[in-house]
Image 1 (cartoon, rainbow, N blue to C red):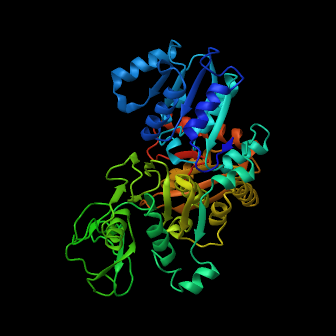
Image 2: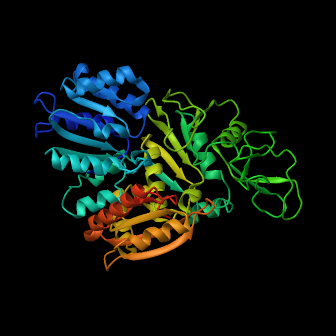
Image 3: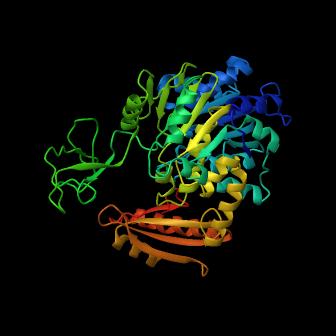
Length: 492
């Protein structure tokens, strides 16, 4: 379990782990290595680095985008033991590597590692079971340590490898927060401004020596708009979905059904004027282009992901996870709209915000600056300032323990129509210690969620009982289908 310091390449650290490991999990010793990364861009990067450190003919990529014929050839080479180092995305967790010596998962907090189809396996859990069953080592590596990783460390199953604090500080960029007393004296409006003066000063100074990364949580132009008069969020008359603007001068469009509402009128006050509620990467790039005339603005996100940028001065506007790698590192990074990440109604919102910020800040040079637009007193912000992901994981785990939330307890989420939930609960034989919470309505019509919570020791029994009941209901072809997930990522 490694939470890597900033500026260090995770791909190069993984390559060193493969080459230097002494447990036989290397090509030279006849053992195989499986590396699972979040997306295809990571696969390209890791394959490039590993082919530089290892014999190129022993490294194989396993992704869906290579096409069925090539994928099948790669699969056969893995089964036959010809490919000893396999790099792939989520589905590669089941790759039948020959004589595995090491399983590696990169950035286990990324939700791309969670399968969206039943039985909803997570790469971390699958690789952990494989490492036990196949007597191989396992490496969990990323910028942060998740609560699930913290549980593995506390149980004694895994060990956390940390760098010396002086070494971490030598690689860390300077982190500035908006809202400190000194900054408020200089700029009283810094808290409410989306681009306060400290961010503009930092960007202007950094552009003299290289590119500046600007991370925006949301894609699009204006993903949510509201009435200018009464501040009521604008909704579609057809499906009641939120209206959004896709570009300057364009008519509002529904984010759900796609209906264009050229003559939108507020249902509450009758006004037709709109204002921005949330600003996307497209609008941010437009605003920065006006604020820094003559500076190239590069966007990377849903419309197209840029893999790399040069060391020339430029403003790189990116959504989380789509940040390009800059040659020599970024001179600075501006992390905008941080409060929108922290205020999400989600069990993992704080952890996810920290992961996104640290991933972005790690792309900045050790001599560079990072500005976070979020509450400076928040635990996630302070963890970035101190560069202390392990301390944050310890505190977050303690809070989850007190609240009896995953991963300190086992939770089953049952989603379906009310009648189906009632029928399923009537057939379940739950342990005495089980807590039943809900049901509560979901966003979808005629669907509710019910939570069943048990201690970790009773987790296997709960899963077995749910499987039994679901199997019976499936055999009966019950119409009111209920979806069951154990420890879902989106619990709240």
